[in-house]
Length: 284
Length: 283
Image (cartoon, rainbow over all chains, first blue to last red; front, side):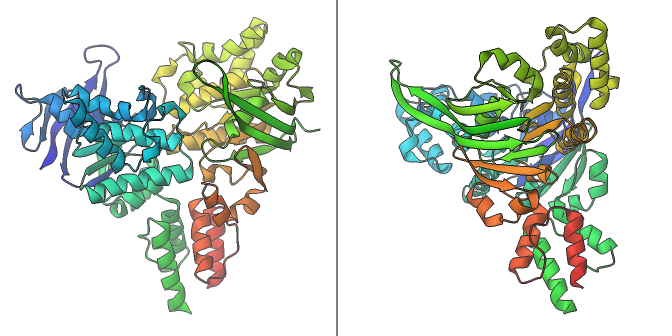
């Protein structure tokens, strides 16, 4: 069970003077239950890539397989594919439109042709999964806080019984606590429901902390693909393509350059702390 | 009196029911009194819904106080006759540059502001040239804004405000939608404007790393100023900031954790250089 991209290329405005190759021969395998972070500067191709995964954009050339089936096959049920591979856009709260949260979350399942009762059961379950407080189910989505709105919007996607959840910068514009809450929610969906997570982010600290695997996009290519630890080792190359490593990674590397024989692997505050403490104790 | 001064500024939103009757009143800003001197770089922090944006909108008279007073460059914003002067004194840059850019060509967009002020044509061009130079976007002057990256668009939006020659620029989460490089460029640009042109900067952000060089930080919660001080004073209170749904830069947190574990590192470390120096002192 996985998503496989085989030589996928995509050209915007093909045949016009504004032709841009947004994806250039991408080969990837996304396995079941992975937590993947996708990073890259604006215009690197990350949004184009994720829109391919749920079939919103059709590759100019190449194939995409979901669980062994070619999604561009004539008989392939693209509608079902889009339920299985759910995409949460940037600022998803702008898509909330119903008079109350519960109705809004029911909208997707009802459009699948499910009965009112089935749609409501799914909405209930989805709101439960995102930890949405029950006493707010019938509030207008416009009366909610930024973080709650976003939770409601994610529930709207989960109500489709998503197996793969793709989120495009789900924390943009949230305060630090709100950021942590949404990321913790995503981590919980991954752990508890074994959902495959694909997280597009501009925060190296966040992907370093949460993702098991990082895919770095640059100029329509996959530049790096590995664990955060492996990828952030290339912090100098990352800078060249407009990215960075977490702040603590720099601290470790710079201390090493100053002659302290520390392990420079740390990518989270916790890891850096433990490494420095260990080093301090050995010295003392 | 500083360039921006508020005295017990209060702003109330009136929430009405479907018939239009007053349902409840919410105080978004609650008796805020602050004073900003000309040329300062000020940061305002606060969680979503804390009232910081509502307060910021008073600085260029998009909103006027329900109670209390706001003076911008000595002018009372509640006096409607002052509105246009105030908007020329204090420019505003919002989170999403796409909502702020209107022309199909970069240089025309920047000229839009001064043109509306009735500035002479030659002077408009001069201002456009200077503004483009200040944000280092001269080579994109004849491009279409929609071909630019987020950070570049945001710099165009800043140039558009600069062309009005404001004494003060208020930026409400200008980097929320940008990638790391775009973020760096925008912060560099406004720091430069503050240093070389003495433009007063009011920066609202959720990225703590962006404000470590500010002259002063105000932290707002439930419409009130709850903390006020230098970045070092503010960021040495890690636990308090967490209670307020905020955070500290990653290196500050690492220093804090090391200190909790018993290492003698000083409080309120703000940059990776400071942290490295502190660690070097240990050995």
